Image (cartoon, rainbow, N blue to C red; front, side, top):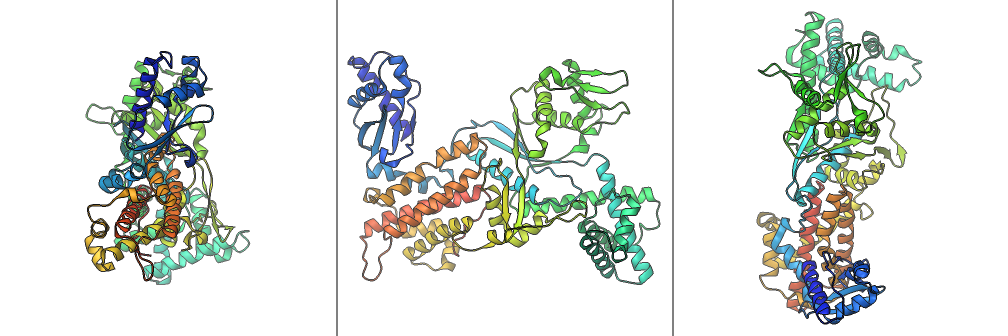
Length: 614
């Protein structure tokens, strides 16, 4: 319809100019949009306001001239001039409601926008170190990143999801050493105390729990193994429960075979095995959260030399060298001329001792991404804000100006019944994302984590999010979907088991039939349903442009509210003493089905299920 109105306005301008009511001027965009107030019609054009300077006329006079020459169209009931020069279009009921038929015919293609124009886009998100499980903050990146990718795909971006594995550097040695130390403690307990592996594992867990509870370190006798662990590693360790768990897995697989080998051999073995074990846990968690990535990119692969004797890092540096953006200082350090691109200082790539900086990996990694896709977006935590300029600068220097973007996300405050959940980095205590998914469920977790702008901190109250009542937004939206499914089942005369076999689309087709008259839907609540459905494409376009998947949750809640208002005001099925015309009932069932499909589609894009029964 906006395209139709655009064309009608252009025809009216041409006719007014030919009649001498308007001077000659060229219109590129008639500014057809949804008015904020539905009392002002279904669509409005701001062309008169946009053309005032060109026409050298008051916008209201331009609007009046356009309206006078507006061609007739059977879909438009009336056209009015309002305010300083808005041209408001009121559709007849059939035209306004035709979106209901569009939804039912287009299915999951409904509401698509063409913001991306097929652009090949790399979206990198989560990207936590493989030295521990994903925490709740990482969980927000899962929800935001995956939902954003889904939205951008619906807006015609060719999206590639990527996870950058930070598996290069000394933290991997620390991680492997932590697991090896716990393994050796298990062996010690089993040998000295004659306990089973499981009992030894429980002893270490209890010892660690006593350490966590001893906040002031006043009772070291209650946690001797944890104290020994810290002493052996000098505090440079990972001390969470998961370290003991991985150590137990290695013992159950190999027994004590690694206890009597030299420390380096054991360290090398445990570093790699612990890394693979943790990476698999991370992959399992993201999969459970309904987020599957296209590529898990290993940072250490950037330093592997190919048959030509060069690594991706070497090749990226050669590119920068060729373009004149590198220099070496007297102490042998290699630097990138970041100040050329507006940075406050140049950035070191290789230190004077030959050690590569983390930034060196960034350079090679982003160079690699641009060999595969045309545009790159990274989702980072807000604490990485200071890194944006240097990475942007190096992307510009590599020859990709304006093609790199960073989306920043704020963190999550985890609460239980309004009180902060205690966590300690020093003690290695935290609520993992996996634990949150297990307790709260994927649906409520993902919905809540995506429900606010990434620029806002989220207060995630575990107990509130678990509530199954209409005060909980995800329940409220899912309940609307389930309620519609119940209506359609009753109309089709099928029970739950039959509906499950048939699928809800087939149930709806049986309930509604092929022919229904949408012009019968004239109640304000019915018209509002159609208006809200019609706004989905614009919402998707804005969410994709602004990187704002939270708008889908707002849209879902508004659509669910509109449906509940419709259901309360418009009887869909006949009941005892309350007959409903069969044709009107079919049209209302079609409206219900359209809402069901759009609810399910938007829920799917944010990774939330659409239950058919609650």
